[in-house]
Image: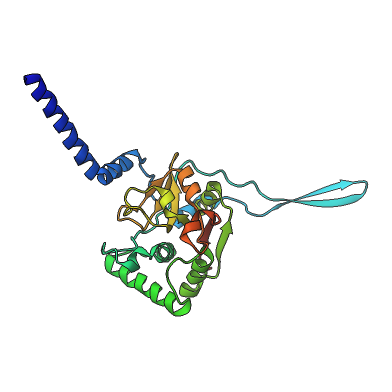
Length: 274
């Protein structure tokens, strides 16, 4: 009899534990995710990057070759500087919902937040919740007036917004990009905006099931992970994704959420005005 009661109690304990674990599965996944992330290297400024690159000679090397009295000049581009093992740009952060209200507009404001994050980086500004909310509303109003919409802007539309809104002269959109392409830009001090199929990111901090289309900012990397400012979560500052996960998730908006994974792999790079 005692053995039977012990078995029943054990089954009940296991059942209750399983139920509690299921209810707390999001929190457990988030804690596991935090534990798996590596310590981010100390953040560096754009000026730090310029100093690091200061001794580089970007000019091409001209080599004169003479043969049979005919001279030829070969223009040899300099070798690219090896990427550092770790890098972390000092990029300010805001979520797309500064007061965690997560209204319908907030849920659709990742493009605006990612653009604003990069703009504040170049302007050497920092966020308060009040400032971020005001700025994001201003971007949405600007888009509605000039584009007739603010939801689901493509990489090209977002790049044009950055030019029109803040007067940047050069904002590049590049396609078929790789993690190395992204790192090369960040190593030059330029944070990169990425359009993604948000659910492929697998971020446990997103509200389930996660955004179909999502933009974030890459600010650096550790030896094994990519460091982002992801405006889709309050825990998005210096949020880390595995390179393979991030590469797989990069997809530009192509007009429909059902085909988001067919969108091209694109990135947006903003250059400071001289």
